[in-house]
Length: 254
Image (cartoon, rainbow, N blue to C red; front, side, top):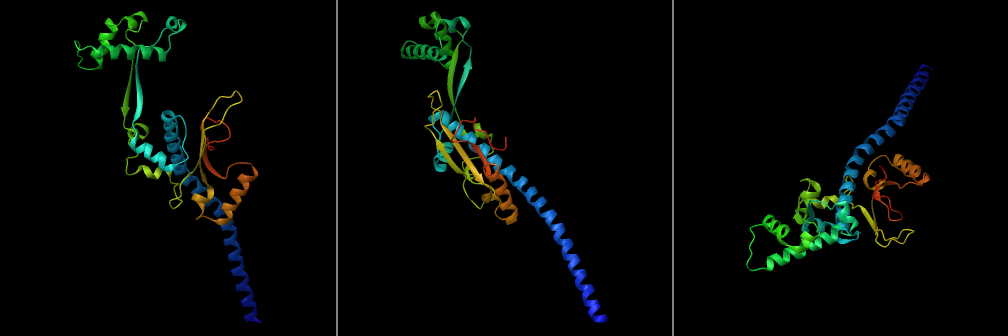
């Protein structure tokens, strides 16, 4: 009897320990899952923001977005970033008279070309060229554009967009989802979207599903997370932009 009693007591003790461990695990597993998820999403969000920066610049130069990661990478590696240096501004009186930035730049460009074609003139730099046309060109003076200047310069794309965070050797990682073993962000574009007023507004979307960067964590917690977001009609993951409606390229975490 003593042996049986001892076995029963030991069995109950083991069961109690296992139950306690199960209870602890049932509490700590979701906490650990959420902590790891939060840490990883910081990195995923950074890549999505960097992708958005690249897509916005691509659209600025090309007029459309691209769904091709390779095309976007080639653009970042080989194209310069163009910036307009501005000096002076149009007055209300000039604007009321119908002068626009575009027209003003055309007048200046024509004046510069005319001055550069004059074989009797020579200029050490752009400063000297502008000083000459401001003083001598009839159209420039007629439109009151003395002191008005617009110069397009070319900068290193990666340095300008990312302040040295990437170079040509490291930029490839921008299209890869962190903690996903090399999976690339899903990208889609809708370059033909039109508003109710008939205005064309190109749209893009870049996505990282939960399964891509959380697949090695607790399976049940992952299933619960996806189910919860799906029932709320939310995208089950992180994304930036929207191909169905303009949202100013916002991320779904913002």
